[in-house]
Length: 246
Image 1 (cartoon, one colour):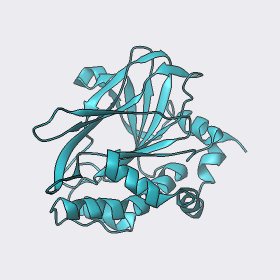
Image 2 (cartoon, rainbow, N blue to C red):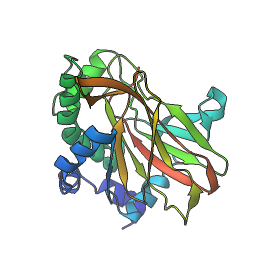
Image 3 (cartoon, helix red, strand yellow):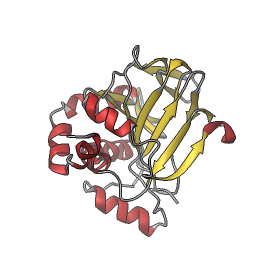
């Protein structure tokens, strides 16, 4: 089977089973405690290579050179609709597992917004709000590149959790390039979290705000994420954002 057929053959039932084999109670606790959780071996090495190989092809709606916008150094491309089957299937399956966490977070933060379990229903709401452009993206970094700390919001509707899948193998394909989160806490110094990933691992993480349990109940913290400097080699990442953009 060639790389193109590997992507096409990955259907939603397989994605749901693949995602569902993980301990989502434990992953939800990790998200609650730290704002991120690693989903190990979500993709095979062959699937990672197949997705990374799409980068120079015609699957994308836009190409962003990060230095031109002050985002860092490196580049990325947003997929166009229709998404590759593998990307769409993962987006749908992961959303269904993360929506209950997002709803629990909003309840704790006093936010009345609730998210449907069905991703298609959430995308309809995005499109009705004028957010119709797909947001899954493929990122490419080379030596000296980095991604500055940021938040991926894109419009009034923003799902509070997203995911990134590392498509390259640390130590073989690249060095450096660690995934980094920062948490800005009220009246306290910021906390940093460095997330170790291997090829095929995904990290689910807070996009913007998340609740943290304090002595007097939950309070809101502000999250940002980025990638540290690539010291050598090339790093590819699949970014899965669950809301669409204006």
